[in-house]
Image 1 (cartoon, one colour):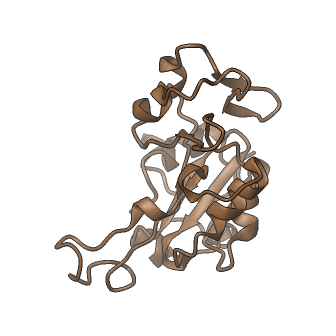
Image 2 (image 1 turned 120 degrees about the horizontal axis):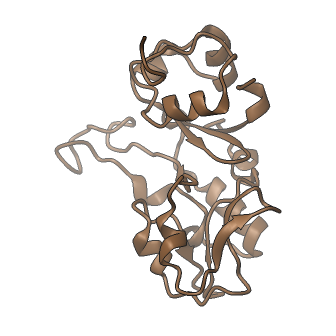
Length: 209
């Protein structure tokens, strides 16, 4: 019997664990059912080309479409305006600017999605074994019942950046103004602000049984 990672998405009748196992290995190479392709807002060709990514969180699934991202940074500015009351792409909970891809042969090679650039939205993955939580010296990172995910308690955070260096993707970022660390809690502002539909949040109930 094939394992869950090899089984195609046949319908919406997946458990959340099924979905996590499959999406955790990436979508490339999987045959996605038309009903789910419609829900994700993409085509099978997008999946095969690796242009669609899924970031699973406690609240839902953030679908990222690289082919639609123009690098306008609206997701970052909206995120920080909503959560921090100021604009600062560096400490945004969703990252765009540091994921530029210039092609395998470097700048000018034309190897990116837009000839010389490939923008990739990225954010906290809500890891099963979060390193940021483990290394925090004062326990400021924990599961938040209010947010429904692993979050940073700004009242306790001392801005030491231990969480940033411990995260394999450096997603937790210290705000240069408040000196507090933060990471995505899936508030949805990034997707609301995206003018091209490169970011979409899908509720778990729409995917799993």
